Every structure is written in structure tokens, then in C-alpha cells.
Image (cartoon, rainbow, N blue to C red; front, side, top):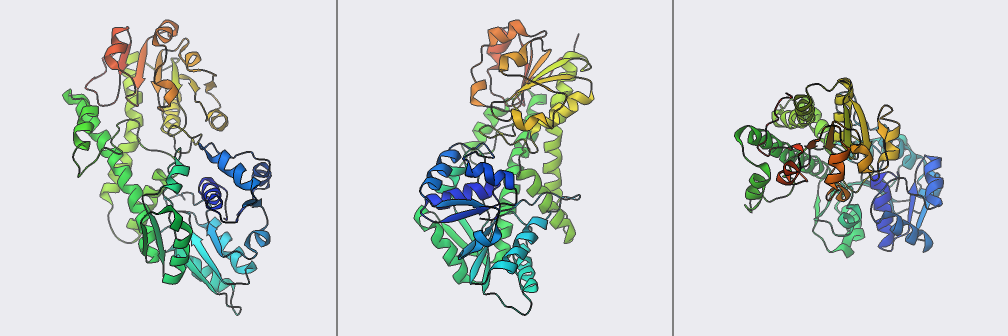
Length: 434
């Protein structure tokens, strides 16, 4: 398993748990050393237990050495980062490095599996990189695309009980060998060509992002017309053709996948002469959700300059410490640009946030966030925020203004307590200050 980031570590640990011998490789010496000590580089429920258990049983190993990792390996999974470039294109430098290392080191038949999310056509390109590197010394290998569909916060469950496994290759036999690794999971396994498998990943994420942006667009209309988007979404979701998933209005999507993948798909579309109007709109609606929160706070408080704003939640979603493209960070950036003083708390993401939020006062409890605050913003719907002591919060705030950007709380109850409450798409326009 080349790469011990989110996908590589979870996938490697789960394959080991299925009885395979797995070596996880990373060039980051500190990360590998910490993993050998049992220290996880990410927070993911259940991951530490499964890693430690399989290390103890001798099925899971960690190394910085390509020769050690690839010796006698039947499969080489490439699970390295593919960050966004300047125009939204996926940066494949780490994929290239992995492919070149495989070409330089491996001297036996091997199946190279692209686990990273990569542009359509990357499987063919990886094969070309290996063949070019091995000029004059042919290597017996096949490339298989095996896109991941892991959700942060439930990744172990997603691996062990997947909706489907997608495999793509120009060599059917190679894809079938990879399929055998998943056989015990008893899930649908779809085998197709390389480019179709790569496209399935992008199309899936783009569609889910579209659902979220759609319900946020509906939420904005609901606010103007006096409707409640939660009930609208519930009514929509009861239609079997639609379903309820990904219809929660709020601050929009973030994280390591949706922003990067939607941008990359739009970039590929433009590059090949098509016009991805829908994808562009999906991204614009998502950006606008963060701006709308700041506009509401400005209207409620009159000005944001020197106002103390408390933010609950920094990770892009609950049950993870991942702050990549987190909506909370963009909201905080916009607030600080208008002179606001921000305090924040998150159950898991505080350490990751320190370096990127130097001006934010990070505190130890939700109640410290509320102390002396002119407004309180719920940015991430962690379970521990569901039943806060709002009487204590009301007494400690300078101005009892709540921006429930995840529609987690009961607006009638909070208004009855004296809060100025507003959410997303709940038919409540924000009265201007004064």
C-alpha cells in the first residue's frame, strides 16, 4: 500500500483484517515511525483498534523502504495524494513517483492498482510511465483502477460493508484477481474498462455534491417564501426516486474529496471541449452558502467589526479531525476580514486548526466559546452539540444571537428562551440590527 494517508491507511488496515499480509509504505519517516508506535496520524472511529490488532498479529507492517514494501508483492496499491492544481486539475506528481519506483524496483509479475482518485486516462498513463521507465527490460504487469468510496467518519464500515466495488482494467484477469481480495465482503463487484471505472468515481462525487448544492438552493428560496427546508427535504426524500440522503441544508460540502473532485471533473470537461454549466453552478452555490452566513450575522449585529463570534465545530464534518476545505474555516476567514474576533472549539480538530487559524482563540469547551460572544455559529453538527445547556449559554453571551448553520436545534425553544435564532432555509429572514 503506497501511501498512508486517509485512503491508504484505512484500506491497508482493512485488507490486513481480512487476512492478507499488508505492508504500508510512506516516504514520511515521522509518520511511519509514529505508526510503528501505534500513534494514528488521523482520527477515524475504529481505525486505531484495527491497526493495532493486525500489527500484533503480524499481518500489517509499516516501512519507508520501497524495496521492502514491494518485495514479493502481488499487488501494489497506489494511494497517494492528488491535490488540486492551479486550475483545478489533479496534481499527479506523487502517482508518477510511485509508478516510477515500481518500475525501478519490481522484478516479478505484479498488479498495479490505482486507489487514488485520478483523472480519467490516468490508468493508461501509469502503464506508459512504467513501460517507458523499463525500456529494454519488460515488466509483466497490469493496471487496475479501484476507486475508493470511503466516507470520513465511517470509513471502516464503508470498507467492510460497501455498496459496491468498482474495478476497471484492460486485462480482465487482473481485475478478477483484485476482485478476489474483496470476495469475502459479499458485495456487488463491477468490472469495467479503466476509463469508465475512473469516471464512476468522479461522477458519483459530483452527483452527491450536486444534491447538497440543490437543497441549499432550495433552502435559500424557502427563507424568502416562509417555508421550512427540513420538511421540504423530508417530503422529497419519501419519494423512492429521490431518497433522503445528502438533502441536509447547511454550510455546503467540504473535505478532501468533493471540492477537489468536482473541480477536477469540471477542468477535464473544459479541457475536452464540453461546457460543465451544472458543475460550475454547484460550486458557486456551495461558495455562496458561507457568504450568506456572514451576511446574516452582519444584519443581526449591525456590524461585525470587533464583535466576538463563537464558532462550534471546525472539521468539515463530524467524526473526523479533517479540516481540509472545511466550511467553518471559510466562514472564519470571512468574519476576520470584516474585523470580527473569533473563538472556536471542536472535539477533534483543534490541533490541526492551530496552524491555519493563528488569530482564532481556541478554547476547551462549547461554553467557553459562548462566554462574552455577540453571536454563536454552529458550523459542524457533532453529537456533543445536540443537547447543550442553553440557559448557561444565554447567561454567558453578550448578545444572545445564534446562527444554526446545520439546523440542529429547535428554533421555537431557543426563541422562547430569548435567543435571536436563525438557521438555513427555515423561513426566518434576519431582522436588521435596531
